[in-house]
Image (cartoon, rainbow over all chains, first blue to last red; front, side):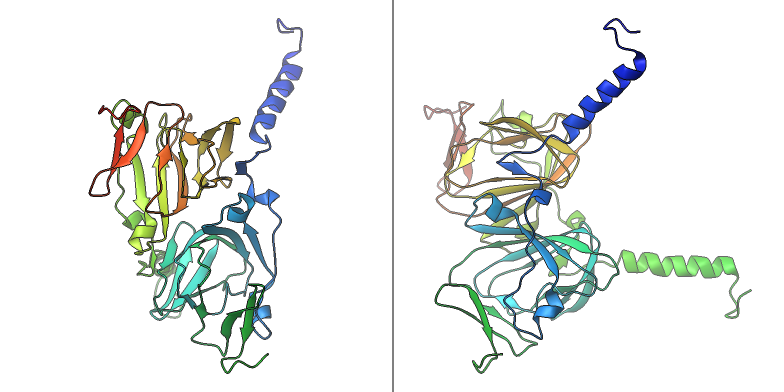
Length: 181
Length: 181
């Protein structure tokens, strides 16, 4: 018995429970655990492009904090999936930081393997299309970071895909001749 | 001997070297390994604040890609060090994503421990000051993400510190009465 009347075993368990409680203390805003943010798996792409990127989990971390000038998504890309079609933006800088697994970055310079802890960046207005492809058998996880610009437009050099917006501001894609898929 | 004339040992080493080569293939822009970006350990704070944050390694990943609308820093904060004095921004949203180790987030709501894989976000214009403190014995590493706004100003609720800029646009700090430290 220890001086507080608990056996060593009970005391140990009690201490252990306290330690676990401290480690798993739920976070409250302005902090959060990304696991508490509902993942989205949707795409405005028409087929045959949509099924090349979905299913794909995106957790909109910036939105969860009410941020409006930057977008920060935590994305999990499954085996065989593509982050997007190869594209570039006119007004939005982008940076991708790989957290887990690996992806192939495809640009005009060819292909490179990005492993956890490496990153890639794409200045707005550069006409060098980029995409990530997961060619492994395991999910890859990365942060996608960009500014937000209401007049941003994306171009797709490899695909018959033209980006636009509906009158409500939602993404809308057509063929390059403007016709619907 | 194997059929290609190499002993099993040599064959194994050869295969291993090929694997290592593939894993350590140097990245080229628009990708990079953050280890190839020179870390900065400087602060515009006057004493006694400067030595509360330094030494502190910051790798400016966004700058390395020429990005101008967002800043993305990979920061390593040593034991006992603070990310900054507690502050808030008027025009810059901020998001911090912890990669390694743990830091204490201090805000008006009190203190919370952020472990690897968790994050915190601070909307521009909110008057809730924040800072990170490393109270462990190991370095902590995190990404600091923000938009960039030329008219952004920071306020320091806990310290006699006022933010300003020199005519050349560099950070400049005084006491709140405008006098020099």
